[in-house]
Image (cartoon, rainbow, N blue to C red):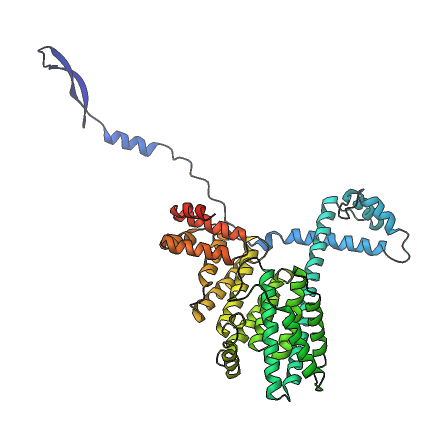
Amino acid sequence: MSRLPDQGQTQSNDGERAERPVPKTIYVDWAGLETRLHQRPQRQAEPAPRRRLVTTVDAEVKDVRRNVRDSARAVLSWVSSVTEHDSPTSLDDVLDRCLRPGPDETAVNYTALADEIRRTLDVELSPKRIKKAIEHLRTRHEKKAATMQQQRLKNSLDALRERLQANFAALSETEHDQRHELRRATATEVLHAVRCAASRLIDSDYGEGIARSMDLDGLEGRCLDFVRDVVNETPIGAKTLPDDLHRLLVALCDYEGGCESDMRLVVDGARVVADLMGPDSLPGILAQLNTLVAGRHAIDTELYWTELQRLAAEAIELHDDAATTRYLNWVRRQEEEKRLPSPLRIASYCQNNAATHVLERLFQGELDGVEVWLERAHGCLDRMSRRDSGFNLIQTTRVVYLTVLAKVTGDDSEIRALFTDLPDSKAMTLLQDLAQYDNCVEIVRAAQNHATEANPELKHQLINLG
């Protein structure tokens, strides 16, 4: 039972009668409602959900790939039949009919090409299938050519390394103290020239305490003295050492100050350093590092990564080496610009260059297997932090890593948290170091944007810095 309002009258403040709601009693027959509820026909049930199918990408595109491969085989069969010696069809005539007018060799008339294949093989292929097949063949050929080129380059580097090691062994086999001192001093001078030339080939600041200029005339004279006193006067078993020295002397004589001259000086100088001190010595490793970094854009990323990891491992092995310690003690008594980093610091430079190069290519979308390369870059950062915690590029490398991670994953929480937790002064110092040492302008700008979003006060300071 419930009460509903009814109209009634009440006494107002001014003495007049006013209407007011009066409760009304209504009786509800619940037993009748329950009977009607049970007698009502059932509502139609919801349709059963569709069965969920779990499949893989490879399974979904399997038929498409098979279709493309079959089309590619048909195109190759047609090319083979056209180029046969006794074929009645002329390849030049086919090209005239199937290439569109103009100098572009890739402007193919696929409709005409489909007619040619049907006429020759009696196989029906649509122009779209032929286009996909040709793109597939080109991609496969490019990958195969790149792999073969990478393998040839690696074989050449291994052969060069063996030759340089043989030259060093033959040169140092029966030398006296005076020749050892001359060889050590000459190699140090050449390494200084290599580092100077490499620093000019890189836009950002590079290395520790590297001078921007060098005395090429003095270096040329020292190399000539070494040739006269060692190579010409004493028979040695290093057959290719004179050729390496000759190439370096030619590079010094023809030096004009441009990028080409600097690159020749880096390559020829690094070869001589490895001849004189050994490719697995500290100067030899540093010379190879400079060569790789200066020519990094012309080297495949996988090979570049592998070589830098090899150099880092070799540098770590020299940490407790007695001969390396004696050499570093001698170098510390030389001019400041000729002093060299420790083996652990050189290993850190190898890891830093490997990580930043990979991250730069990931940021620009030039690498496949993003997760694999991100894991490798993070491994470099971790090894630097554990072995050389005082390295000044650890923090900048971490900023680059988090910036690239934010782009490829779409989650910028880690990079923003980094700048949120840093005081303004340290955040500005970190951004200045990033702009000073990193070569990728796009990464630097992206990191600055993340920093200003996390801390808007930094925006005014960045504007003041220009």
